[in-house]
Length: 178
Image (cartoon, rainbow, N blue to C red):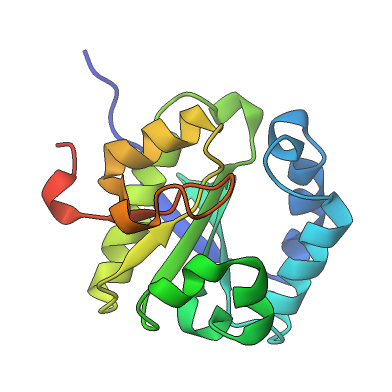
């Protein structure tokens, strides 16, 4: 008998979540793909305190935190400073949004939670009116690329080979796996 799907929710990150995020960011499976713990927490603080427009959330499964997801606004990064390091940003629509996701709880890895949470988050973004949704995994993060493909993200053909070690993928509702 298949297990019942677990309700997925998104809780806006608050200052009370910093210890949990620090603990997750210190874990080997997070350190492999995310930056320095203190730097990453600084970015989240900037979001929570309104100095960055990125919207950070905890992924909750049946009310229990399992991971982290954020939505960032491409137009806010289409400036000289960002484009100097990431020229591909200039080729995206200014109203596009980007998503970053990670499962923090190592007990929740490889259980389909990341794909399910990303699919739910994409539905939420589309309901908010966002038409262009991207995600940018490192090319060598094959597990993430597979999970994102499962949700309906596909590499953007005109950016292939022009983005260094990251793969820019765009959500395509025609390619969602059912």
